[in-house]
Amino acid sequence: MTTRRAPTISIVTPVYNSRGCLEELHRRIAATVTPLDADFECIMVDDGSVDGSWEAIAALHARDLRVRGVRLSRNFGQHYAITAGLDRAGGEWVVVMDCDLQDRPEAIPALLERAQEGYQAVFARRRARRDSALKRAGSRLFYAALRVLSGVDIDPSTANFGIFHRQVVEAFRGLRERSRAFHVLVRTLGFASSAVDVEHEQRFAGRSAYGFARMFSLAVDIIVSQSGRLATVSFGLGIVLALFAFGYGAFLMARKYLWAYPVPGWTSVMVSLYFIGGLLFINMGLLGLYLGKTFDEVKRRPLYVVGETIGLESGEGGV
Image (cartoon, rainbow, N blue to C red; front, side, top):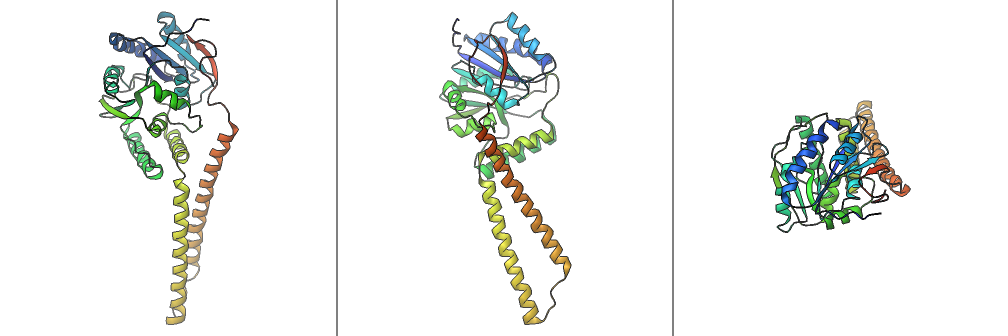
């Protein structure tokens, strides 16, 4: 078995039903990175596509051996696909980017230049996001909640696109929890980071797999996994309500016995009952979320399963 020579730059991109983007993606990556006079590889991770994306990756590899492919056994999700690529990336510097060309390959030289100024992680900061108003609003709300509930302060104009030193990649690979958001976990590692302003383009082909329900589920998953502060907030709310109920009860008793004012009837009782009942269900659901995350972690199942690879030695990386 021959040993693959470590490249200077590895480019990792998750692929899901994006066959129409891959030819143009490869052309623009090669045109951008080749002039840097640095060996590079492009690892495309097929995350259970059903549109022929894997065949397109194989065709690109047949023409350019710098293209390497990883095919997951099913759809695991974008951040798991990124992890599969990082587990196999050998470059001193690793670029993570989406394959739909909203992340412009032409920004890679600027990212590398900033990184060589002494930063181990450099994120691409989108000047103007080419997403729907609903998606932009949801993103701002998510990052605001994440900042308050977990203390992780992330610029909402940044995402996965960026360049990362080998040291950052190895540290990230040591994080094997199931709740994964690449750019959030990298921020928690604490390496020196910076950002470069880049243009954000329209999607080249296809459509996003992230609908509102999937985005909401991912946001809840990240917030719950990054901090236990939600439980603290819930506990504090319970104390406030208990104090309010005690004070209101004392007020009603004082009105009755000191001023002979009749106690309100069933309306206030029913409103209070529904209000407290709703809060109890919320708290029970919150407890269930934390227990569910703990259950997922203790099972110790692999983050992903590889079906086959192209251009990578058998057994390289791991599940």
